[in-house]
Length: 104
Image (tube, rainbow, N blue to C red; front, side, top):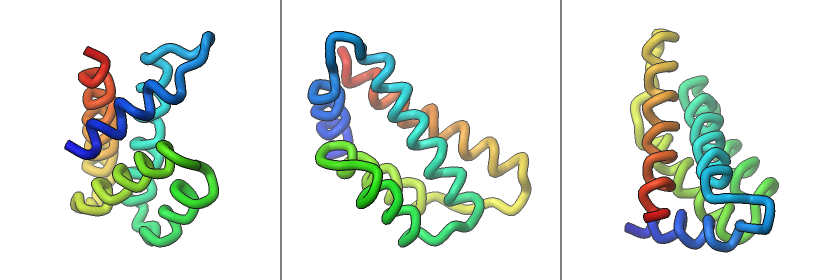
């Protein structure tokens, strides 16, 4: 529930005259994709958190990135490339769907 609220807050706070909700959801999905690719590459969570939470983002984006990273590192890591890609795609779709649903 907290994640859904954060997505909604993030979407509202990031909107400008040029930026629409689908673009925000694209950014959420892209962030989820990159974080899960790092997870599947066995990158240390500590390093992922530094990059996505502390250095690149502020405010709501930092909170959302933290939630995405926690979710990603709670998922299994696969050794077979095909399985890794399947997991990355599913994870990206999961976060995109959450964002889109919040727009209702």
